[in-house]
Amino acid sequence: MSDPEKKPLSDAELDAQAQVWEKVAHRPEFEKLLTDKARFIVPASIFFLVYYFALIVIVGYFPDLAKKKIGPANFAYWFALSQFFMSWIVAWVYVRAANRFDKQSAAILDEHA
Image 1 (cartoon, helix red, strand yellow):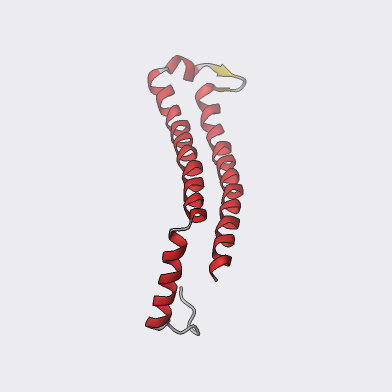
Image 2 (cartoon, helix red, strand yellow):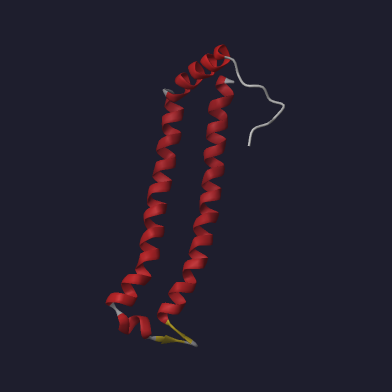
C-alpha cells in the first residue's frame, strides 16, 4: 500500500536515484553483500528441501525404518514432527543472517544517502 500523503517522485528525482543505485550496484561492498546472501540462502534452501523430502524417501524406500517403534510412535512420525522444529530453527537462523545482511546494506546505503 502506498502512503496517500506521499507525492510521486519527479523524473529528475527518479534519475538521481537511478544514478545512485547504479553506483551502489557496482561497489565491491554490494557485490560482497550479494555473495554473502547467496552463500547463505542456497545451502540453507538445499538443506531444507533435502530434509523435507527425506521423509518421503524414507517412507517410500525404507518402510522398515519408517515403521520402527521409538517410544510411543514410529520413526516416520518422529521425523515428521522434527520437520516443524527444523523449520523454526532454519527461520531463526535466517533471521539472524538477515540482520547481518540488513546491517551490511545499511552501511552501503549510508555512504550514498
